[in-house]
Length: 321
Ligand code: GYE
Image (cartoon, helix red, strand yellow):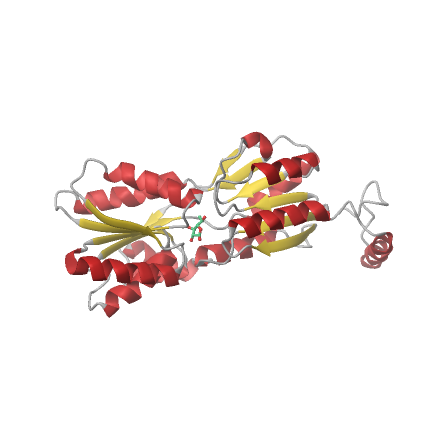
């Protein structure tokens, strides 16, 4: 923390003396603690909870951080306001999990003008990469493609009817998963009946699936939900319509959080493409490197797997989230 009140410095030095720690090099104005503002999307899904937990664990006091956490409830303007407030507070670094890709130029330029490095985690944004130091996340396009490859393998040649629950409109996760999925099923005879956003939440996944079932009845053969939570919401709608999820309507989702893996083990989901939320340690290491002036990669992609029912049964007992 650079901009610290002198009283706090004294208190901090006293605490350090008590615990036997030495004053950091340079002493005085810098207590060695790195203050990081983290602008999280919200708390829309199981994936998000696991990601928030991972970030809070990595940006702990024991690791030398003070974390200023904000969750924007999936409202892009609120997230930009949170970043602006981090700049005003004079934090040492800002981490953003961008809700949507667009609208970031101004606030990123403000951070740059204030000399505060920005590190992105999870989703990407559309601003020039000169406006942020680094990004760590997943290959959403490949995730969508893997889901599409599974649909192609199981349904091509059957004139199957498919519905899609998309993630948050304007998010890189939704855009790239849609693009990857569409390219994987291109040229097949799979018929996309409908595709609507369920905003990555269980509640909206359920409501939108209810609408699909009203409109298309039992002609739906397969559902692609762009995250587990929307798929889990859809399970309720499918059961309420008197249909058997996993059998009457086969389901492929993305994430592989605990409840999703449980549904897969139960035979209610048929396939899950993994999306790893445990990014905290990688982000914390990037923040330290950037602040130390070490050159870092502009992009770090974390590998994902994909799971069947048998995998889920085997892995469930040891899954960390
Ligand atoms: O798949 C979904 C969450 O951006 C990868 O956001 C993330 C997505 C994740 O709400 O569950």
